[in-house]
Length: 265
Image (cartoon, rainbow, N blue to C red; front, top):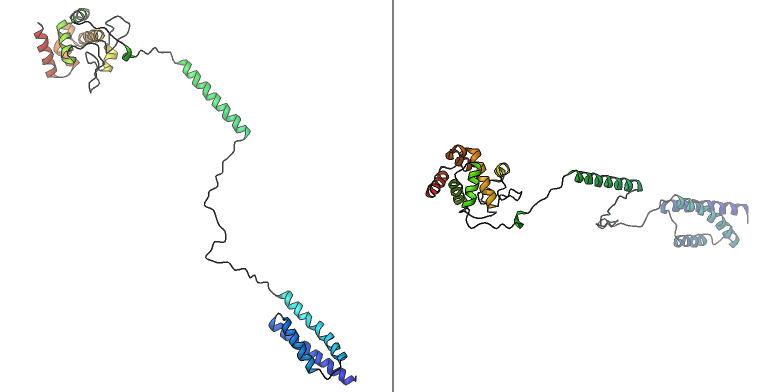
């Protein structure tokens, strides 16, 4: 092999290397098919050289060509082939709400128990301060009333200086001379003589001697009516003023006086 031949082979090798590098720089990735095609064309173009020369040329071309390929692969930007559908949710959030329940430390539990114990002690102390009251249920009382109340009217009238016929007339107009009763009208007046509870608290009387001034007991109510009339003017024989205090109505006064006169007043 002459020196001229070697120079031609070297020139062809450099040309092939530049051509290969240009292809790689343009394409980026050289497939196996392209490499095979290139080698086949190269061998045809250099068929007049000996096999040894061809091998030598390939030994120069391939290493030189691989360098830009490797460099291009290292510089290649990675492109993900994972595609997300914009119409579908990437993350599925559940509609279930997580409830966060705060815990109680040992110190908090001790403080709570202490506060509860102190509150219970205060309540017990307050209850101990209140005096005990004997509450008598009026609904459970059963009174045996006399068939005639004239004796009660007369006794109560004598005790407070009131004509007994006025007491009987009031009793008749208020409840028709009823016995013991819890009858109550819309204004709140209660019992046989129809006392307002606030008035009863001031003038209520224990007429039957059982130590209880009961607004529903007929004897207690008649004595209380005598007490109230006496305090309102009847003790001075001023029945108009007294009856007006009992019920502020002219028709009421006239009705009571008519009944009292019918009884001989």
